[in-house]
Image (tube, rainbow, N blue to C red):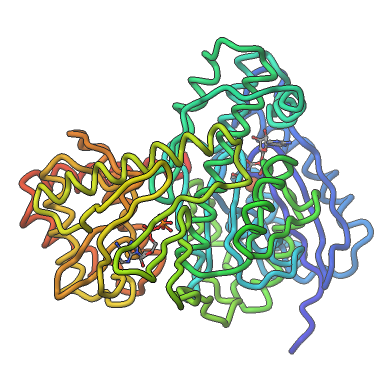
Length: 522
Ligand SMILES: C[C@@H](O)[C@H](NC(=O)OP(=O)(O)OC[C@H]1O[C@@H](n2cnc3c(N)ncnc32)[C@H](O)[C@@H]1O)C(=O)O
Ligand SMILES: Nc1ncnc2c1ncn2[C@@H]1O[C@H](COP(=O)(O)OP(=O)(O)OP(=O)(O)O)[C@@H](O)[C@H]1O
Ligand SMILES: [Fe+2]
């Protein structure tokens, strides 16, 4: 293999203008953060800051470097003016040094530096930053988004809360400090399948009538527990066994502690990169650029336009030759460990017991176990009465449901056009009856005698809202996109069944499109 040499990377999507040189390891890293004089980040002011320090930061980064063989830059996502300032500098450097230009997806760079720094090869990634909150995993040439925020990024939420209390920007570190002295008050907890939403939580935290340390503590406990829960869902669903945490919010000690506890309980490995690689930094761009250069993924100047809405799952990961493991942890034996519950299949009936989670606050833990167990039993029965195939409920305790055993295959193992259509008609019947499942994945559908039986209603709701039904479809489609090569065809098949049994299908499908766009970077 030819020597790839030293690659310069420039990052400047938002608050940090940062440049680094990477060889087999980091050579130099120089940064100049933009600190807004008041309020949040102003895109044009940040871009002016980047322009004013560009020369100095880059020449500092190059001072101890050798010959540069490529110039990499953050092509998106990020703030338009900031991205354009960085791209202009990168183009002119690549031209004057006469070396290839590499356009790096910022989110993928967070992941790649995370893999480099931890040595983990195929992890589930929790990417928690200002603008983004995503759970990702690799499959067949792409980083798939298993779940993400449906409104704002967790860091931006923390920053908004901090601003409301006149705390300095960025708000994360100040909130972490106050939280050390706080105790728990209940705040709204929102998980929708593997997706999240933070804006309701942030509004409630702003309005909370309690001492600031208590609100900071409880905001962290609630927001981080939501992130850890969806990470655990992705682990359980994919069967992967490594987790890494990346992004600026990931430096938070409590966030790290909670993820570590969850992974330990599940027997998964967990690691966090060194601090310098967590928040936005040039090293992650240089490193990822170098890996891309080695696999020939450079771009001509004419195709180097920035992309403020660039998504992690749009990148073709040409530098990884593996396929990524998925569903590797297929079940064996009679005791199944889902994301939330332990399911005992050894008897004639099934016992589903929700387990205490050591990572979350005992009050929050008890509340979630109690409410979800109760809701699940009630909604399974309601769905059955409405003619949807679900298990018969035999008994109920505070943390366990005893129900009929459904003998068949989880849909994820038998998914094709016919079974996808059957799933669609089951969900259509459910939605017609005013019931929303809340966690529609291909693990929560069992094919029995040619019929799709729905299970796992713990996040279910009885509601007439179009929005909740739209989220139901969105969660299901995300599962298809993140796990199946022919997701589009399967979606079509599902919708055929859905339209057949649900008269208002088109309104919900339209809403699902809107929801899909909402989560995207803007
Ligand atoms: C697209 C790009 O511009 C964007 N970058 C970004 O959000 O900056 P990043 O450095 O990854 O994260 C900054 C966020 O990280 C939070 N943060 C920093 N230290 C924190 C702490 N100790 N606890 C919680 N949050 C913290 C800040 O409050 C801020 O919201 C992104 O990656 O989404
Ligand atoms: N009534 C049932 N009959 C047969 N198998 C079942 C039944 N209930 C659950 N299972 C099996 O146990 C697995 C986990 O159950 P369930 O999804 O209810 O638990 P969970 O912890 O909520 O899972 P997750 O949140 O990861 O989806 C199911 O995927 C299924 O294979
Ligand atoms: Fe970032």
